[in-house]
Length: 499
Image (tube, rainbow, N blue to C red):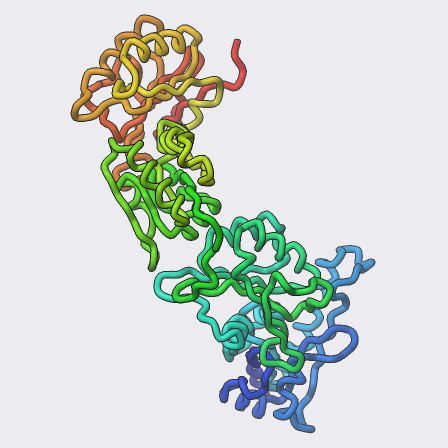
């Protein structure tokens, strides 16, 4: 017969957001059966977790208050705040381990859910690999806040982002701009930065405030109207679903935002462009580029051919003049051989002088191709379109000679199409008069897309028949290098210093 004492079982018990009636049946059951009940508190000794579970505690329970050495104040611990907390968690885990080694069942109480921004996680990471453990999930403050507001958080294909208010304001701004719905937790002293992020991301008008959801002292309201000095730590900011919620849609006069989507799909969108696309009532653009933008309920989409830029711009400005928020969708960067100029040209006409127009940048095809190949644009370079649809070939040839004579790296846009098959060959012959046949050339097609192909050849090897409208060419300077990598791949780069 073994004299070894069987080890106890560890429970992380989620208590829900505060109302004891929102505890799960399993949570009540575990607390009732536990030998030891542990809970965290600040140095004042009052534990929110204990207060939620109070009516389920009995005199025979062994209580283990885990009292934080610091909360928001400073500390003279040699390791600073982080060092003080690590030391505390180690000591707390050791106390619980002693009970578990003695065969006692330990229930660690946690507000909300034990694995969602909870102090229990620090015990779990230190003990769960040594002792049999069960985590009892609980209703989170996020769900409680939405319930108290009576507003859906997300619907359909919407994305919910949960953020700690302790993030830097600029990071909060970017993430709020890029998502559909959001909840920002851990307010208190972070509230001014959170409010600033809401305003800078364009979400302030739709943001709501919830304090102590389901608990005594609960308060809800409009975030913009909330006094920063009154906000406790146990409060959240909520940007709810926009679907079927007219009050969440930006109001005001119509405008046109010309949006750059980068060279391919959603991975290339910036937070700023995501926000503009989400806020738009109408999307206008070349059908190929519109297809890159996820469909949102209630948005109207107008696709058209690639050769009607002026008509597309006029259509968008007419919609904005009638009060619509319009996003003109462009590939790459809208200001580089794309829709921004077309919109601004038309916007300069007297009838559109009062229509606001914004241009939002995107990753250019040249930058994307350069990154895929290495760093060929690491020094001075020129960007030239080989299309002679809007300027004569004589002008293109003159600019090619000038840039080549200046020993600039060249980014050649619109090199060829089904109706334009000779420009690349002409450009190649012209450049060979001024550049070595060994000059590195990046031939990049469908960068970022499913058919991406990035090859490094020489100017002498460049085959014009392999180039189409989905291709961009990067022609190196006399200094551009090609390097073999250990895995057999090749990269090209242009030194930052010029001899």
